[in-house]
Length: 330
Image 1 (tube, rainbow, N blue to C red):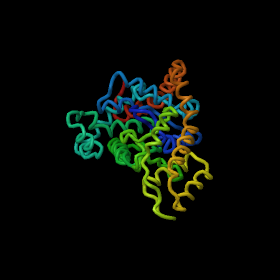
Image 2: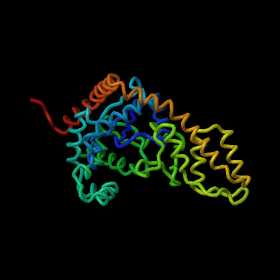
Image 3: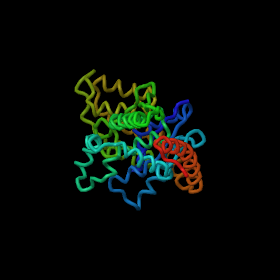
Image 4: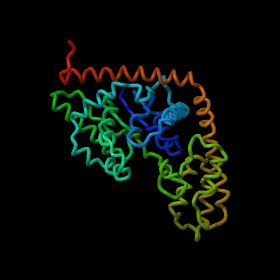
């Protein structure tokens, strides 16, 4: 059984893209692997966190994880700041991270350019903290997007550097998790190629039906096909991509035939159908999210037990690393 680790920053609610792009695969992963899913609240400190919202955001994400089907009996679900061993390993790994390589990190250069008044040490050493999250459980696999591939490569570098410096093979070489299939990418409603929080084009799992209807109604369209069997523009293809995920094959075929026939004036009906089908998918999840979010005792139990299991794993790693590095108790 392989160890898999995945984390999410508590910066907003999960959206349809998160659900189909990752969550459905996480549900499979927890059945077949030793999984650690964590909420990366320390990572959020690298920007401008709102102390009034930090705990609220953590609670929201934890509730959404659970509502989507992650099972604390099958996987370890925890909050990063509940595991102090991470902070110590982060400190130790920082002693093996060099300024030059950290300054060259793509994400650091982008964040420093976007927020020149908040170029803090945590932002600089973000890759080290991410490496710590992975190495604290000596994970075999990490599901990552394209924007995180450099950080995973740096994690392997830190693992190699540690092993070489201390003459050991202690740390594994974590690799990107392969879901054995092409990941579903949910596009944005504004015609862009990606549904994302920063793009403001999301349908959130917590959205009420009326809000979903409004968002889908505003989705970018045009005057219809210019003739039979003409290629769909990207923004129309995006709507069909979402339709294929949430609707039945006969619904998709119906609207596909309308496009191929060159018919016009059917976008309104398609958007109405799309909104209805999205609501069918998200409503049960939204209801579970609200139930869980309001169950303080259950959230406390999940967080406490998750922290205990995560600390057991992290504590073993940290003790081994301390001994390898020469720290001895009197």
